[in-house]
Amino acid sequence: MDPVERLYLDAMMEDPQVPARSLRPQLLAGARARRRPAAPTAAWAQPYAGRVAAMDALLTSAVDDDWSRVIVEGWTLQELVAHLAAKDGLLAAAVGAPVLGPPLGATDSMGRTSDVQAYERARSPEQTRRDWRAQADALCRHLADLPPTTPATMDGMEVPVRDHLLARCLETWIHTADAARTARLRLPDPVPDHIHPTADLCARLLPWTMLLSGMDGSGRTLHLTLTGAGGGEWQVPLGVEDARPGTPDAHITADVVAFCFLLGGRGEPAEFPAELAGDLALARDVLTAAPALSGP
Amino acid sequence: MPVEAPYDDRLLHQRVVGGDESALGEVYDRLSSLIFGLALRVTRDRVIAEDITQEVFLVFWERPLAYDPERGTLRAWLATIAHRRAVDHVRAEERRRVSALGPRLFEREPDRLEDTVLASDEAKRVRQAVTSLPDGLREAVELAYFGGRTYRQVSEELGVPEGTAKSRIRLALRRLADALAEEEV
Image 1 (spheres, rainbow over the protein chains, first blue to last red):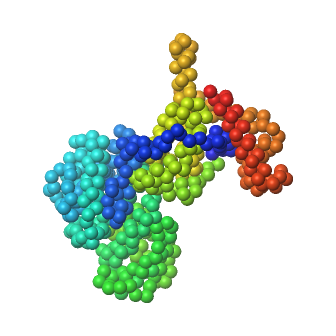
Image 2: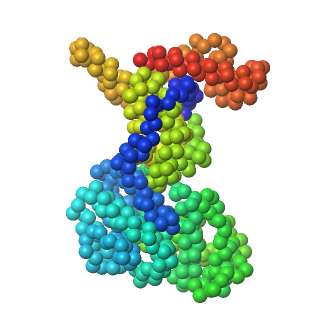
């Protein structure tokens, strides 16, 4: 803002006045009608509920052309939203929450994605958006009463429901960023309290990304420092069978958001901005393997 | 020159994007009297000013990605929306009054060019208003806004106590606000 504009606004705002009555209750009621807040849910599910609300905020601004624009994987925005709904629905099925959309046939991610995309293509983008949001909110409501350690099997993986949900959180975040980039909008990061558990999941996935990439990290330990709001330090045993971390063999220091995105398949491991120390070959292997679990 | 928003603004923005209603309440508590005061100065109508205030915060809630903290403070962004809406209201009122007399007398093209002209008109009016301030007030305001000085630096350059510098700037702002509001309606 130039000085004249700032001066003008400051001058206009001198002697602040107060409305005759507080508009606050009316404002919050009106706000709910305009845009749904994040679904109420268990504390551990809030990072996911927050990313759903952020995606929905992005979709509010989408106009007709935006919905048919290809975002990622050759999918339009409408197909991308259907993909998110499909995977949320699979997790819902795994924990006994309502599954919305077409009847459950295929139970693998890609199969269910094709089913939901075929179903949603016959509907308007606005309907697709509503279906996706309804599925996400139904999941959140169901999770409100579920212990985070409840085992759940999705796509053949049995892990505590909390980890499946953090993976949904990361995927929703990443696809929102994909859509924002296409729309030339700047997407703010989640709040630090939501980034931290997501980064923790990413750190804990490293032994699996090593295994899937055919690299043997067993018996080795990584000291991971993730900087920025929501970051922290992790001692990560790099073998899936390792009971506990040992003395760190390698160190990686990187930005927490960039690291989450690397695990989510956004970013080139070879060019990933990070400080490496200790066993450099091992540190590079960790980065190279990082995107191994990311799918569409 | 773009000014980045402070950390508080960024966090509130992140929370609103994430659908946290209580963050909207906090933004309202912090900025509603400024926004309302601004709308009231321009419209001179408490009911309209309340409506505009509501609408400004609702826009932020519904389309939070329209605000970009890299480009300025939340306060300035909300104030800009409030100001634009208030001016639109006053113009629509004028138009309504004029068209009651004869519809052909008043035609306006609501195009970009007009906005540009308006912006430079406003800048000119602000400069004129600053020029017509008494010397002591004018110097203080010029140093603070056009010279980018802090209160302390203004007090040093003018050789007056810091409290005096502060009150001169505030008094100057009040005079300017009155002068600008006079012309607005």
